[in-house]
Length: 241
Image 1 (cartoon, one colour):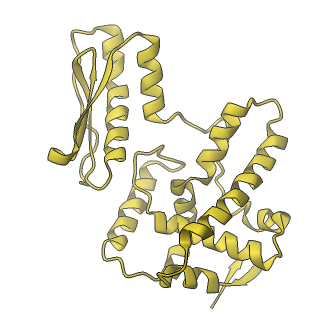
Image 2 (cartoon, one colour):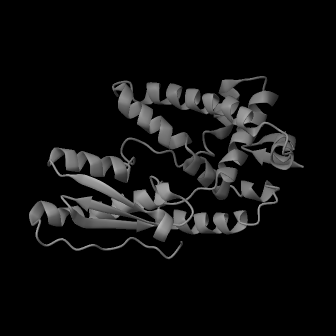
Image 3 (cartoon, helix red, strand yellow):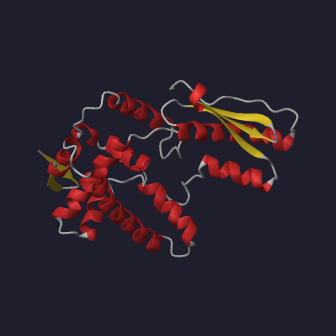
């Protein structure tokens, strides 16, 4: 079985081996691939944005190589078709993710659940090319730079909802609290100055419920800034629990 990547033919032995052999140390594989990706984007960004301070460059690199971004690459290029697994819920998780990226075409910043298995496929493919090219960073970048498009750039990157909410509350001296109801109702609520202003629900991961609650609070926080006595809460989409 082989896969054509930008005219670069490679066997998918590494992918099949990783995803079908439980004894294979996948965490070790990921640890060896992620430094390659980080270095490639660091080098690329250094030359593209020479005047950028380290902080924004770090954020830009991180969002281009995180689980959601790599999972999107797998879906875009149908690499998930090569995934062999015995996980009964994974098919539904992939379907949910494919619907989610329609709402957030570039990146959701933690609002949708990206299956780690999808990112693993991309990492495995990158690792296979890295090994077969005798550890050539230039070859890996040449093969994958187009496949990783659309790359998130300074003009398209958005703040994480948790980061944005915390910054606004700090700037305005608002008292921010998160109420953890996840075990009882899969919900996280946001209180600002003891007023309920946001709520998010997601059953599979508490972190995503919290991110959705933060986003919901951001949608309502303008009412607080304008009139603290007239705050209404609009729930985020909770059709997927």
